[in-house]
Length: 144
Picture: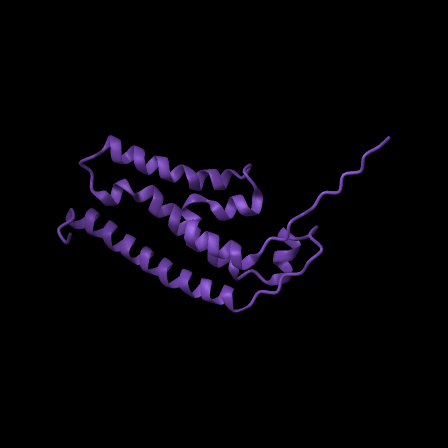
């Protein structure tokens, strides 16, 4: 007697993936949603949290900017991934992530709102990070 197993392939939602990358990108939630728990980049994102805590414990007198730098870089990468994934055309998205689902993606306004919010917050965090980095490197933190 043979048993036939039908594998169900879940349909990956592009707007939800971009939202995950926007909100929890620093922890790699979007990577785990798309690729599962075997995704090395997702684990690298997640490793930023213990790295931040370790830096805080090892260097308690260091400026807070340096202590949270791993998490900040991971968050910036998450913002970039939210934009890259969200701006991918639907047919390319379906070919890459939904080839076996049997459904087609049709993204609309919710994705546009997520992308605008990602661009606003991501650009703000990037500018603030660069400003603080140059302040610390060139003036020793004289401006804050």
